[in-house]
Length: 104
Image (tube, rainbow, N blue to C red; front, side, top):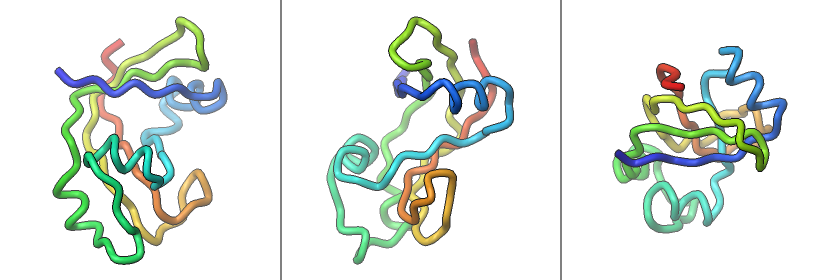
């Protein structure tokens, strides 16, 4: 089972815990590109369908409330690159992690 660990600020952690927020976003930058597809890419010339077909599989995501022992775990429905749509971060190129059922 592959687990993705993400640290969140308490504001976002609480929104996910309450069910108000059902997706988490990360900026499309070299660090996250390498983490999700194993390489960086130029967003100017890449197409979402091609990139999304290369996304590594993660079974669950464990959210950490800051750097504390408070955690929660969710199934991951989908990880996808979104190009050209505004989102919670106010950015246009982001990775969206769609959450499924809460495990613990």
